[in-house]
Image (cartoon, rainbow, N blue to C red):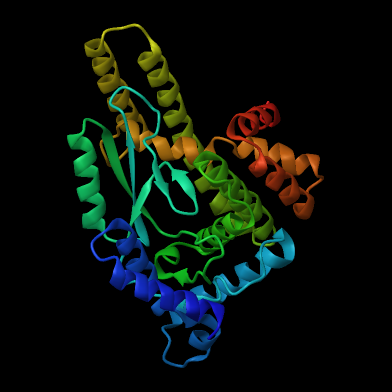
Length: 329
């Protein structure tokens, strides 16, 4: 039995032994995902494969090859298989924060430390968790996530949830998730997600060099997203100042309501934002410019860049933040 099958068997056993608990839910969901995998090359070769799916899977394989050859990302069996989950998202992440603070509520896990979110394979479970957190007086928000990484523990597949957009999004998702296999700092969500986001963005820029139309569309989308992120960052900064002030809580609540309503209106949000809604944007983009400076200092050499990122990951959280702040200046 190979390592992948052995791990899958252990997942199946654990899912039976741990029914009802959160870890049991995670194990069962991961096992179900792994059990759905099919080799992409086999699907592409099959005459009955839907032509649209075949084309998207071929593009996923092309992006996978580029990730290894040009970005120095892991050359393994991750993203060489495909799994259709029959749902719009791979997982739903729950974020939470105090009513008058942007300090993320954290959950701590075996092996990966503490994270600023809790993931569920079932939307109803995620909403139930968010409801409990709101009952405790916290702001909570549930976000659908199209892809995630098991950090190399398993051969992660391309998912149907990753194929709903264009070539750029498919490739970007693969670059992002493979980056998590390169470096992962226990308990530092902002570091991990900012690093993967930077690899995704820079990798995509290079990947689309010979596809001007796609590059133009991706740049326009990135510009729109940057505008939205700027609005969110501005609202975060104003709210942080409000929460840190000596104003009475009643006044803070009123300012919070006004700021969030302004953000909803200006950014064209389809949801009612709260403190928890703002968290992922700070986590996924906080250190992107710092990693850009670090790659530049290594003259664009990915191998040297990853070595420096690993050094940062080995530092304690305070020193790591200090170094990143220096790079971002």
